[in-house]
Length: 474
Image 1 (tube, rainbow, N blue to C red):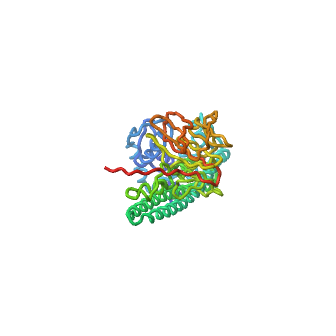
Image 2: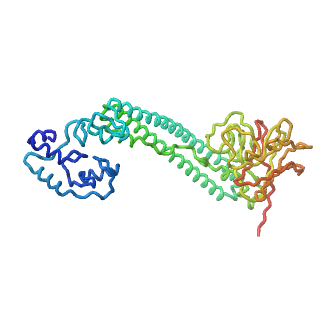
Image 3: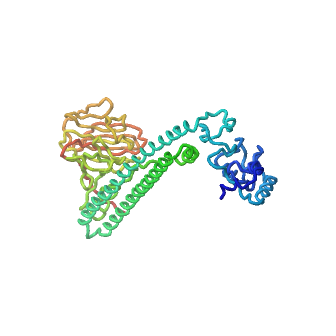
């Protein structure tokens, strides 16, 4: 009906209709507003245009919000025009034409990214104008590049989502292993410590649920982003298949939609269970009146940092070579490819001491390292890499300084004692059997320091030596 309205108008009314037509919506003015540049627009069209571009849609002169005033004379003229018999609401011209000059859109402005007519050339005198035929492939190429980027992101999201799903399964496995260890320890002390057993199992359950819930939230978020990216790609591909002119007319809207600022998913630090809290030195934490039935270890190992080639005992007090590479998550804390494992607790102050049973293993490294030590690539163990340690290799004991200082050892030690004084900035190494001093390092420790162990690839375990327990009450 609207398309036939122009045919019903008297020929002499057509120029008047054009004068009373809003350049933006191509309808008769509704509540017209006058800009300082003297151009008028429907109030709603002007408000909508100002949200995206602070310039006059006709002459592109900048204007401030609120600077437009009601054009009452034009409003009255529009009302009179619409009251005429059989004239009704004016409509848009047929086809795709310039809103300003009502001429066919035959050119494409590369700077403003919109099609224009030949009369618009003066308004784009400093811009590069292309034919519609040349402009469409250029826009398609840009959208195609966006699609390629999003397809790569989609693949990355899927891979990370798969890793996160595997992490959930490993957390469940960890929870199962921890539950077995907790139950075994409490079975031995069950008569007296039933209440403590229940409390610790609950703590494990809560952390398991929290960690799994956290990772599942990330999976849900990643899957949501995957769907959104997929929908966006399909939308862009569908729009790219449109005819040239509709594509160009919708290009700005498509380009605004074709943005992606969401951070890519990742396996976060601390996503695994804190195994040291649940099973590390568990017996010591419940000792009080049961000291004859428990052992104390100054250091327990952190399985979340252990190389996939290392196997830890259930109580986290010994480590040895694994006969095959373990299936474990690629979490940020884990050493790989270097064959190391850290203690579960790091230190920022105070004095600390622990003994390591190295036995007759022909190759090992023991010491301390800063928390930011390299985890995901091979590196030379040295003080200038944030590791203060000693080693045995090919029958030679060495202090792992950049120049490799050889240590004189008269009797092969089976135990190595490490003393760490954070306040003094000193770490020293001793023969744990003879109490003979081997070497000391001094350094101003500016971050958390962790015990580090490199047991070498040998079947004999490296184990933490149990300490003596004394009970003092007052």
